[in-house]
Length: 68
Image (cartoon, rainbow, N blue to C red; front, top):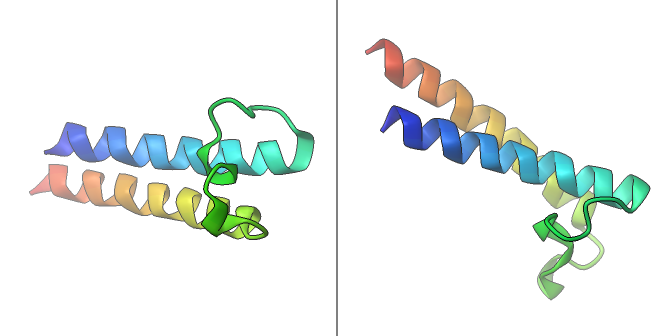
């Protein structure tokens, strides 16, 4: 379970950072998933920040789960 949480947290953090980099520079257009859904149109920066924060939270949770 710990490894799954680490991988999921890392992917969420990576997508959040990639979405922010894509919004600010135009790079990472192929794998930044935040700009693809029509429901997020106009809210890409907010969604990327939420993804990055969720990734950090899951990584912290995986560290705490490892201690038990």
